[in-house]
Amino acid sequence: MVQSEKHRLLTILKIARRWKPSRIAVGLTLGVSMLSGCAWLDTKQRQLIYRPTPGVPAHFTGLRAGDEQFFLPVPATPDTLSTGEAPITSATAASPLAPQRIEMWWLPNADPDAPTLLYLHGTFRTLVANVRKIEALRTAGFSVLAVEYRGWGLSTPIVPSEKTILQDADIAWAELVRREPRPQQRFIFGHSMGSGVAVDLTSRQRPQSDYAGLILESAFTSFPDIASELNSVAGVIALSSDERFASIDKIKRIDRPLLMLHGNLDKTVPMVLGERLFAAANPPKTWVMIEGGRHSDLDDKGREHYQQAVLQFKAAVLAGAASPDAGARSAALGPGGGPASNDRPTGQTAR
Image 1 (spheres, helix red, strand yellow):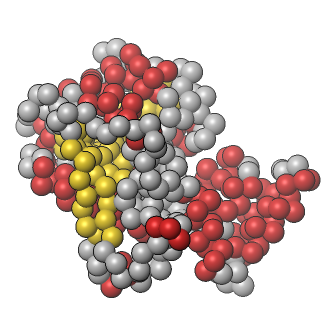
Image 2: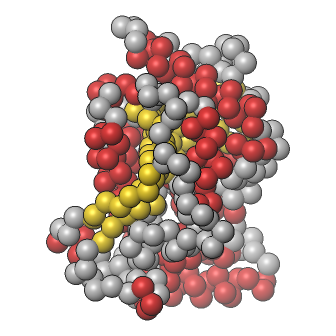
């Protein structure tokens, strides 16, 4: 057994000691078997982690007038073809050599000069299930470009991986650059798993010339950290996986203004993980805690506070982009207009 496998197994055993007896055997069996490197188990592992959801719900009648649904091809590179991603169902199975695609939504703001936001969603929920949150961001003054990763919605039905999701985000980024030629009008938004996608994407850009600001909602430090905090059987799966989304290792490479929102009742991604990621991030940064908010309802449960936070962040970033010395001033105030504190989130807002 190699050193990394020993470390994972020891972590699994440590967490398992805190479980109820009825869950220990199941958890350890899953954890040890997944250390074996079986391809079938790897596929099942990724299905459990990401919970991809292909197709469109029957109740969805389409986008509203003026909005656009379209598809972008996934380049058939040797790297893409070698991922071995299995189709989710035999009914939708396609040859590994068949062209793959991602579904995209374009929701323009009524203001033609509005900045543009790339929307990156989390696990399980498709774009259809994210309509309310997307509309909340459009109401806050953005045109929204949203991506449906392969495995979700009408994109190619594969069992996704961190690798394929990041590939899809890169394709969406290229489309954002094409639709929004003004770098200082480009924003990136990630919710839940999408926060990990957003941090990875922004960490690879040129901060001063490629985008203006980053918004993270219900964000975390890494998948293994979620597993440790939640102390669940599903956590063992994440601990024994190569699927990491380790934002904590990438956040220091981001130097543009950052807004982080989190609900204090989030049981999917405990708020402490968002606080740790925020503490590790560079300024300028703003922390907003939504009282009573859970994992996916911040735009609804704390609608007024949520809108105020996003609007103020957008205004500060855009004002900063127009000023020669704005780097230190953008996002200088928290919601409500008061001064923000230093590096650690306290109360409801911080910088």
